[in-house]
Length: 296
Ligand code: PMV
Image 1 (cartoon, rainbow, N blue to C red):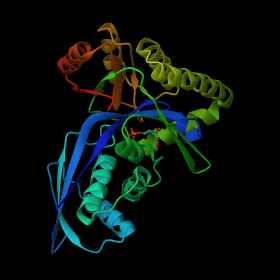
Image 2: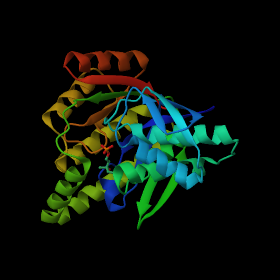
Image 3: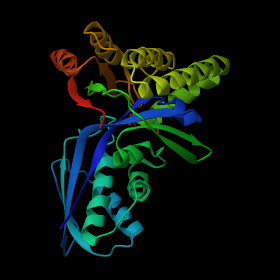
């Protein structure tokens, strides 16, 4: 039997902008998926979050690793599905680690992430790769993808970051549709979008410094500015706004949408653990989902 795990991730800065080659900052959360593999006659998945396409991704990983055996794959996950937290990448990374454990393979973080990316391609077409990178590395990363080449730089997290994820459960459209709508709006106002992109570049520069120097108040303010830019691009909804403003009223350092937006998840930087719990409870009272975590 082999065992492995992978982390959840959240994009702190740069969603949507990353599609146009700008950098993004992502962090891994202390929520994980554990996978156990035991050899068997046929491939079989035992999971609370079973999903029809899961097996195809697991097969892609096995093929890339050159493994012919079949397994019972037991999945236990703390990461909600479809909430922008990279649940599929966490399963993939956990599975690669479990196979490596089963066969006694010594893989580097980069190799683990690259094998997991094989499954990400099955699930998401041409994903940026930020999810599998964070699911295997943990911590915080600066991520940029230019002309199909990605550059990843680990960031030192100067002070613990208390995170709340709020999810409306009402995402309007798929990520691909939301990206296409943004592209259409950019074509109508290219000059204004260029200014938004330049502002985002400054936000990311400041955010790298705030993370590394351990200045969560400055980081939160930059999250608020980033949310304003995303709102200007038309990807925030009333429900996203309700969560974000409630979090700010409850004393969060900052709050913004995370991922594609349009009713998807919001990320909130709370002042401390107690503040995170208070904000999460307020979001639940509003009828939405909330989880608290820290950067892992
Ligand atoms: O909400 P999600 O997890 O589908 O995130 C999408 C983030 C985008 O920047 C809009 C797209 C991407 O591939 O980075």
